[in-house]
Image 1 (cartoon, helix red, strand yellow):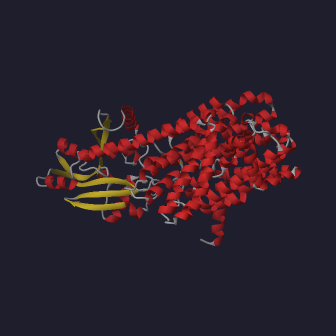
Image 2 (cartoon, one colour; image 1 turned 90 degrees about the vertical axis):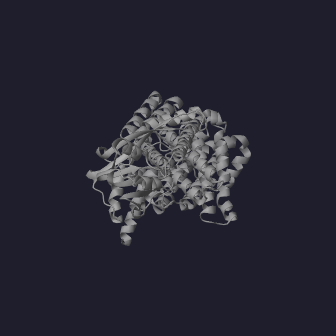
Image 3 (cartoon, helix red, strand yellow; image 1 turned 30 degrees about the vertical axis):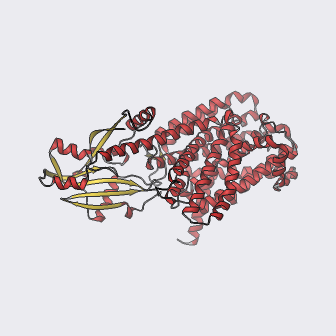
Length: 625
C-alpha cells in the first residue's frame, strides 16, 4: 500500500472513530456541570469551586482517558481486539487453569461485563434526555414534552436496529465532527469573554477544592465521573479501528474540544451563575438553543447507537465464551462481519431504557445511576490489566504496581464517590448487573454440570468403534456428521441411530467445536482432522470468541485436508438435550430451574452453526443436573 493510501485510510478511520468511539464521552458536556452543582449536592457555586471542578475534569480527562486508556490499556490488545471480554480472556490466558487466580479473574471479568451492560442502559437514556432537555431552556412550557419526545426518539432508534447502520453509518463521523467543532467554538467564545477560567489548568485548584470542601467535594466527585463516561468504549472498539486512529481522534479532535467546552462552560458560569440549571444550552444565547437541541439529539442518538452495537458485540462474545445461552444473531451488513443484530437483546434493552427514562424523568436524576456502572467497569479493567502486564508481558512487579497502582487508587476513589449515589439511582445498574451476573454464572455452572453428567456416562469413542466393527452394521451411502462436545464419548445421536435404524453411513465424521480464549483463529488453523479407521474421522474446529460459527464454511476448508463434502449427500445428526433438575448435589433449586428455562429457550445448535435445516436430523436425549 502506498503512503498516500495509508494516510487516507488512517484519516477515514479517524473520522469514523470520532463518530462511533467518542459519541458517549462527547455528549457528557450536556449534563456534567449542571449535575455537579445540583442543589442536592450542597456545593456552593462560586469562582473558587468552579476553578476546582473544571481543573478536576481537565486533569481527569488527562490521566484517566489520555494516560490510562489511550496510552496504557490500548497496549493490552488480544490479537488486535479490545474490551472487557477480550481483556478477561487475555488475563485468563496469562495464568494457568489450575492457578488460584483463574476463577477470581473470570468473576472479575464477568462483573465488569455486567457493569458495561448497566452502562449501556443508562447511556441512551441520559444522553437523549440531556439533549432534549434543551427545549426547556428555549421554552419552559415545553418541559412536559421532554420525556414523551425522548421515548419517541429511543423507540425509533431501537426499531431501526435490525436494518443495521451500513446506510447511515457514514454520516456518523461528519455529524460528530460538527458536534466537536461546535463544542470547541462555544468554549473558545466564552473563554475569551472570561479568561480567568484558564487558571484551572493549574492542578493546585483541584487539590485545593478537595481539601476545602471535604465531604461535599467527595460527593461532587461522583458527578465529576460523568465527564469520563465512554472511556471504556475507545478500548472496546479497538478491533474495529486500530490503535492509531483512536489515538489520533482523541488527541487531535475530541480531547481539545471537550477541554475547551468545559472551560467555556466554567467561564460562562463565572459571568452568569444564574444559568446553572442548564449551562450547555446558554453558551451562545437564546438564538442557538433550537439548533443545539437538534445537533445534540443527533449526537446523543449516535452515542446511543455505539453503545447498543457494543452490547450486541459483548453478548456474542459472552455466548462464545459459554457465559450466555445461544441466541439468534443476524448480520446487518454483507461487507462488515462485526455489524450484528440480536433481537432478544435489542428489545430487552429498550424495555429497561424506557423504564429508566420514565422512572427517573431527567438527566440529573439518571446521573447517579451512571457513575457507579462506569467506575466499576473502569476498576475491573485496571485490575485485569495488571495481570496481563505482570503474567503475560512478564514486567517486573515494581513496574506493574507503578503502572496500574496509581490508576487503581483513582478508580477506587471514583467508585467510592459514586456509591454515595446508591439510593439515588446507583442501585439500578447494580441491580441489573447483579441479575446478569447471576444469569451468566448460572449458565456457566449449569453447562459444567451437564458436561460432568455426560462425561460420567460417556463411552470412550475409540473403544466403541473397535467393538462396533467386530460385527459391523449395514453401511449406507452418504456422510453422517455427528456433533459431539469436547468431553463427550460416543454421541447419543449415534447410539440412537444404531439402536433404531440399525445402519451406519459409509463415511462417519465426529464434529467437535473448541472455543479458544483468543478473538480470532486463522482459517488455516481452524480445522484439525484425525482418522479413526473404517472411514470414520474426528473433525476438530477451533474458533475464537469473535469468530463467526459457520459449519458449511468449515466443510469447505476440509477439502484442503483431503476430506471433501457434498452437502446434498451429507446428514447432520444432533442430540437435542432436555435438561431436567434433579434433587441432590448441583446448584440451588432456583438456579437449576433458571438454567433449565434458559436451556429450553436457547437457540438450536443447527441454527447457531448455520447448518442447512434440510440436512439436520435431531434426536432427543435427557440430562439430569
